[in-house]
Length: 164
Image 1 (cartoon, one colour):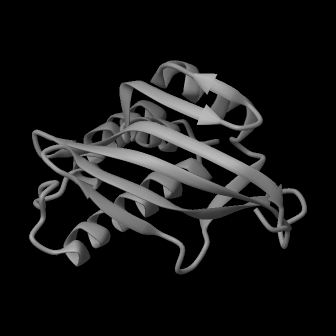
Image 2 (cartoon, rainbow, N blue to C red):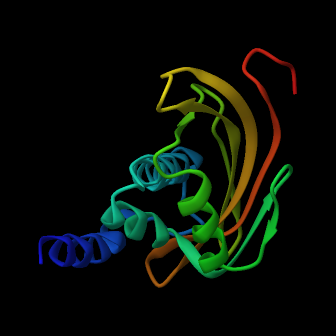
């Protein structure tokens, strides 16, 4: 029953994390940047703890059902279910993702949402070492007060300290 209660609470929490009062045409770039930075932080906080089913469900809410995920070494997935199956299989309990400081860029998409770009590193839970780095581009849609990812590109995977 505790797991069910936690799962329901996590699902109800998604609109809180995935909502914003700012629309895609926010009057200042700083407001949009702050909104998308908070969304990135919340989505990957759940990703980093996805061994917990409630956190995996919370992470799920940040993605549109028809999300396209392009990964340079893993290929393409065409749906949220397929992407999350890969997350469950390859990520949960294995590593965490950290946004690299001062790399997040956010650009508005008129009447739609925003593009976010940056670099992130991956840290292995077993060793505690952060040995992998990659770049990302994500398309955020703002619809009916909810922000969701519709396209994700993760590319340029390399060892930490290597040039892209």
